[in-house]
View (cartoon, rainbow, N blue to C red):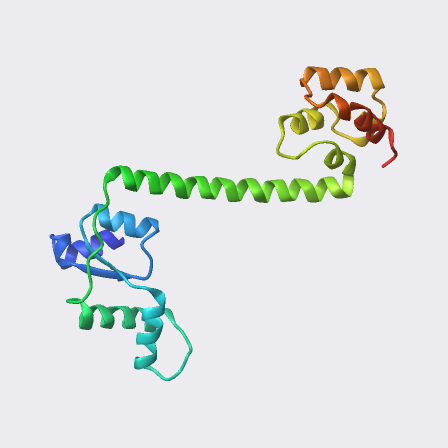
Amino acid sequence: KNMEQTLSEITDDPGKIAIICETKNNLLINFLAHRNYRLYIINPKVLDRFRDTKRASSTKSDKFDAYCLADFLKTNIDALKPLKQEAKVVQRLDSLYRFRSRLVNSKVKIQNRLISRLKSYYPRALELFGIQTNIFAAFLKRYPTPLDLSQETERGFIAFLDEMRYSQPAKIKLLLKQVKREQ
């Protein structure tokens, strides 16, 4: 049995069900808000203080936290303001922002793994170009191993830079020296 079925057994009117949570930025809250449940958000610090009035021990458990949340809602519902249903465009922007944040985090993790592997196997690749540039990706595609790079001629490497429309001609001599240095 899922949560929606359980809640619908209590009443068919979601507006009669009050739900309290410590955060408003998660999929569950969005799901419940779209179905018109009365949602109340509490600051976690407020719940910590309330929890202290219920028990002397500082140990936490999900069951006791649920009890504290329910008791806080029951005793303070008149002082709380229900979460307002945000405009669809705001919800969509929030959803897109969270999706973008997950993508950025994934990108950073992948870049960190790539840097780690290159430092141990192919450090020269990291010395030549910034990891977030198109030329870096093209460089790894053209010269996937240190051996491939060491076998490239000066003319061939300059042709690669020309293909990539490398925009720093003053650095080309420095790049050529780095390419020819032993790893």
